[in-house]
Image (tube, rainbow, N blue to C red; front, top):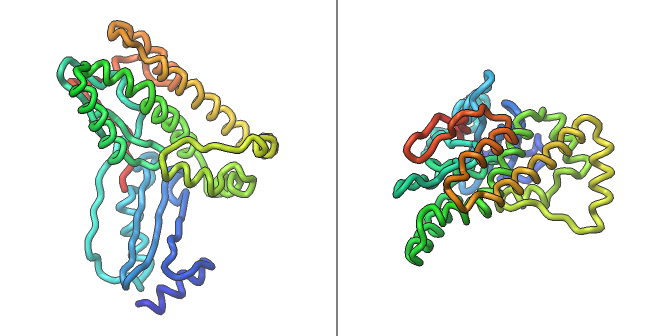
Length: 269
């Protein structure tokens, strides 16, 4: 029902068909995007179905039930995506964990396809060049692994946010179009030097929320530094892994390897 659909967009002060994004609807780590084009409606959702929160699929079903102007489903689907820092060991002899199997996922929005494909490409390049799987994993952990580990820290922070806190971060300029674009492009946000004083002032003026964000940023920097020191000697990985577990406040147990996987938190889009 296009007339009712246009009324829906109008209620949200948006141009018809433009992407509408509802965040924090089922815990801080949740989202529901709605768009319209060519007589069809597109709905994309995701959440971490824990602590009583519904899955992304359930959010879509609920939204469709609440909006009678949406017609019958044309196509769709859902799957679980692991959201956790990368495995401590991506290789075990000739066994190699790639993509979801290696927890190679951009955790803050549960995206692993591009990361996994890129990891596969760099692995092939390394093997063709005569390097060992472990040598590839060292280089990957120190670069891409460092970025993903820091992003997992931010994911944990976002999971604690309420809709009001998200709004506060946006109003104060701590989350803006540039940071959103960086997230979509899966790269760390960057700022001009002249912007730093304003960001610091906004951080200090955000009370306990600002303090939480500051701690998160500090831990992100520590995670990046730790992963960039991933050991070139495989015999030192266990000690490195213990340090990582302490930083991420994880149990000091043997982390999974490609030969011994373990269940992980999941986002269900």
